[in-house]
Length: 416
Image (cartoon, rainbow, N blue to C red; front, top):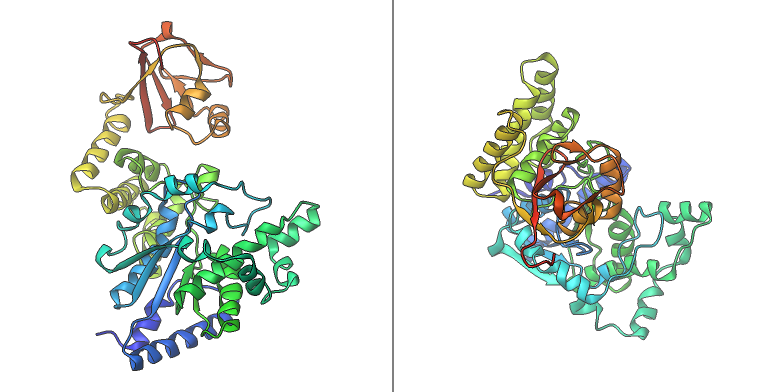
């Protein structure tokens, strides 16, 4: 059985707070809380929240999930919290403008498969799944006033993203202040010992959550703030669906495989570390072998892709994804044989087809891909943003990037 010090060492690994003093304080607090729980004969109450602003989680979300799994493996009580109420506003952290507000119907639709996706990493038998509308939806206006009285406006305005908006003359809406307040109340409602989050959650967890717990007579939670973010498929910017550089956990096996194969070589180290759990020493050795030529970049990336896809899909699906990739990129065939089909009844702009078939997330992403020569029709680059496909041109193969293909065929019933 792991000792308290062993647990602290593992659970604090990868955590960062911007200054060493805060990190040391969190380490001490965690050790003391573990000792306290040992005396009381109970596990730590640990959680991380995931707002269903979209319908899919992506590989970047698994970094905090793996930290939750470490707590589970030490026998602690872990909650996967679905932010069904906080997502109505959306976290303003790191945002230069207010988010669009969702409806509860949007949220319910998006949240439907969140737990199922999380169980690819978390132990289903040891995971408590909760929704924060359980407690947030029951608060009345008097409750909000009481909770808000624990904070000052100045505490919120010093946040970097709010301060930047003030400097740029951009609006800060009053409801955006409520997000940190609601997330802080999540910690209170669960009497949390520990909250896990990314760097964008530093204020919400370390300041707002701990302050509200203290103000309401609870011991402040320990903040485990993960120090690194997973870069997206561009290898540079933090993975984000809004930027279109994400790899969804619900990706088809061949699509996930292909997106990993498209990563810049420089991103391989951080993917091995954050997704596969490699130590820094292992990553350093890998990168040294790549520099010296001892390891081949393409073969290394293929092994990485197989291992990541196997986490979220069956062995058979993983091997099929590998076979498809080889067929397209090593066999010289260019276009796979087993293409999905979509019917087309009338002349339609290619950007609209891409959005309708969910090959892109928006017309804006379609525009960027066309401008970057990332869209092909029958292996010819689509160069015009107004390019269309007519029924007379069918059948035709539409391709996005190197991995997404669809065969467009005439509609049998005259309707799309």
